[in-house]
Length: 190
Image: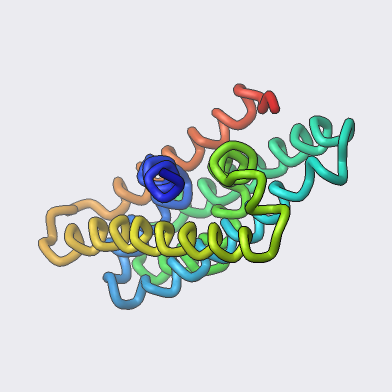
């Protein structure tokens, strides 16, 4: 059930999946593989931090979530702006869609809160064995879904279906910008 819940949340389009898809489309599947490692690293850092946070922060937890929500929205707006201005050059787009940007997008992704505070069971943060077991399953799920998104993007690249890369870059920027707007409009309630 844990793996199924993780996969269901991961498969939903979001900022990280959008970057993986765009990476596969712009750079191909093989060159985009490092993006999955960055995604796993970003999610693991966020899930581990937020899984432990309620234990240590108590009343300050909600305030910290609000500050982080706006910082994440700011980062996503910056990323959307960079993608918007990539000027249809594959190299420019590849610089924006880097392991660093995928790591940061995964770290800022609201899904990490859902994973840490809803999907991961409390035992995952109470014992080393529970943590390693759940993190192992989680990492495999992230790997599979990440490869799926990259492959979907790579399949478009290989067939030449996308004629106007500038339009695609702008669409990716708008999708990521819409997630930033959603972060600002919809506050967390945990």
